[in-house]
Length: 253
Image (cartoon, rainbow, N blue to C red; front, side, top):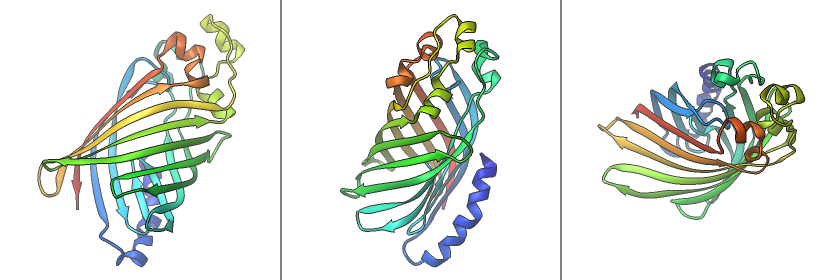
């Protein structure tokens, strides 16, 4: 993840020079911990140390460990759009726990595509993005709505609801079971097609501790639906309920 961030960071920052007069860029760096499902669809969790990066360059885009990479190509008052990229976690033998060696481990992947957003007001916007594995056959789509809540004291916070879907290869990669795996687990094979994957509600907050420091908090509650939620792997050995919590200490300027 760090290597990918650095690979995009240099050209991304270089673009800022041409747009430096548009508005004031913001930079935030830090580190923290994320408590996430051990694998997509798991009922247990693991703690993952993470870097925190959030660079916003008005007129250029954003690079964030939370939301991925966006490069703006559409700069309207209400419409924004352009290039989108993000990182997808996989699942290791250790992440799978007792399922390790019984179902396939999955390497993490970077996905790339495009995004489009429409801002109804400064606080409320809707949008979507589509992406494809840069090294694989998986394709992904998401639609979301984001609302910036009124500040409480100096705390800035927001709510986002999102619905996600996958094509067949991605759905089978994360939630499918071939005949051998199914026989080993004592359940039925599952080779799903494309469809909805998850509905997710996320609360994000920044809690300042000084002029340039603070804590970034995110709590996400997701529900696997469609072919993902019906997977025997999830139903028999995991959970459709997916909760992720992130806390990081951040320096911004």
